Length: 109
Length: 113
Image 1 (tube, each protein chain N blue to C red):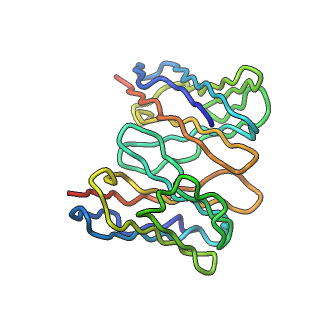
Image 2: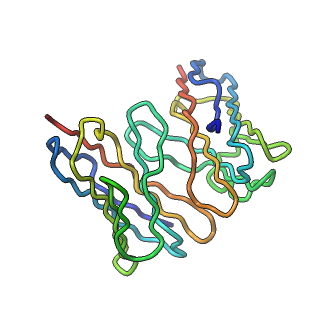
């Protein structure tokens, strides 16, 4: 099976930087996704990491270390609209996707 | 390009009643997923289709849940009979061929009374 752990809740201030961590245990790792989900809405794609290292996309960056089973999502210049749940999801080479329970981020003025 | 379409958006039924959810994936997307998401949790896979073939239904409670994807396009997920614990959001997602990113529909919010 697969285990995915991420903090339940985080709070940060508008304009600041926040890092959301995700650790996982899986066999047949084939990539890690981060999705954003606003309350009452569907998840939307943020990033996809297959190889080790940092992927930067505007204000959002995602890091992966396959040897450590670890990833983080870095959000810079936080805006109020970034308040949402952030889901870490691991894909296996068998095509299975397993999601963590998400980290609810609250951005305060 | 139209996104993944799901209907109904909301459904309230009494326990022991049947219910069905419909999903129309993005045109050309061969892979289709059905997930169940409980409040405060991540989506849990119910079934995955590659075209019309169910390639992973290991987590589908087959005593009461069924799904089909005729012609490899639209899909229907059915629960019969529904139980109180089935109250959740049912999400459909599709993936284009050769890629991994999932595109989610808005979901159907089910309340079983």
